[in-house]
Length: 365
Image 1 (spheres, one colour):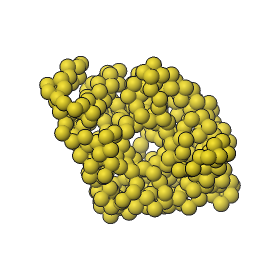
Image 2 (cartoon, one colour):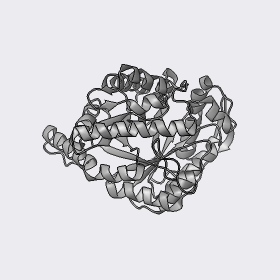
Image 3 (cartoon, one colour):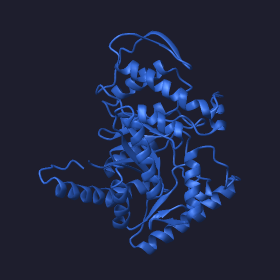
Image 4 (cartoon, rainbow, N blue to C red):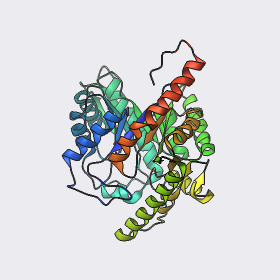
């Protein structure tokens, strides 16, 4: 199986170590950021969702208009747009992008975040709603005639979408570490997304999701997220990690934020469990920023030279995880850096493995 690399773009320059800079919707930065990923050899870029930030549909549309090859992964939360309408919006955007769209369905891990947009469904009910939501999305995308839906959260009569996904299929990414999340993923997801965990716990999740998918006679792919920190030497890379930790702590203090907010999501709890095991796990996995921000996002890093980080990625590849979401703490510049060595080096190593296993295989990595 070939390898895929996903990056992540924002609507203005900002990170855990860089205060938000520029206009809230920085059209030039969005375009430059997307083009930098395309030029660096990424396959796809994630556009995130937040309850107080610019609309991700429009950020994606603008980024897509300024690129030609790279694909997109649009984060989307059920609960705020009717699924029949969301299906048409997503299919329309997919046509605008000439079939370069996938959707990452996020059920929502924070009650406070959901309530900012008017959603008061408790966390225990959000995965059930997500399951039903995706059912309706898929009916709208793939039904040749009108359909009725009478569910717990949504009702529709003779619903129909005349516009379908550009390539007749729109991939669904899905994440979450709870039992409910894994249950829904097994039924609905094309790709299951993990945050960067130690090898042993990542392997456990992969097996759990595969078992869930098998109950529906389905197979599923996997993605995992890291924040690579690269240096010309291993010592330089670890020194760079410590500087990043210092800058992140200073920015947290400057903004008056809590460094140890109690997480609501099981995924955040899993990251904090990793933090409790130490700063450096599996030789390259660094939990320094995850500890600072309470495990609240994909914040674990792989630290070392491009060669060393590439080898670390291959250990996850051997678990059956063939997609890597990588983004840096200096977002645009790091994306450019990843394209110089880390991405091509990893592709080359995996191509060599595939050629050795299947001599007749023509690599597409």
